[in-house]
Length: 68
Image 1 (spheres, rainbow, N blue to C red):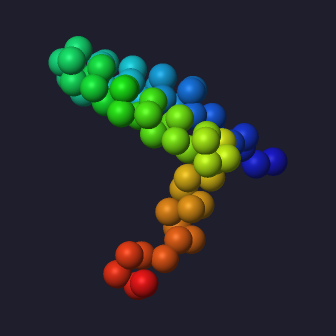
Image 2 (image 1 turned 90 degrees about the vertical axis):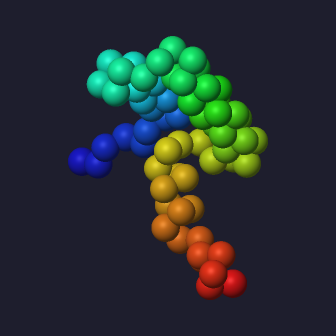
Image 3 (image 1 turned 60 degrees about the vertical axis):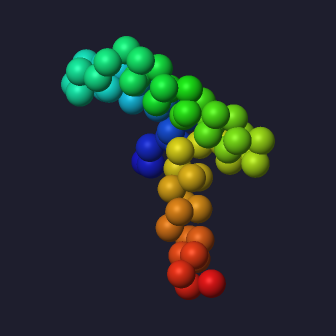
């Protein structure tokens, strides 16, 4: 049985917690990372990219800029 696709909101929350707890980054740094990631999530959802897995697939299947 395969794993379920990773939702953006769950993954974002886990990553921000990782930055705070494991990496010990400053609050302002974490806030900036979170804001940038939220903007990316908004863009992805607007483009009908609904999961982290879908982004990963696009990265692996899209041609490299140097291959164009």
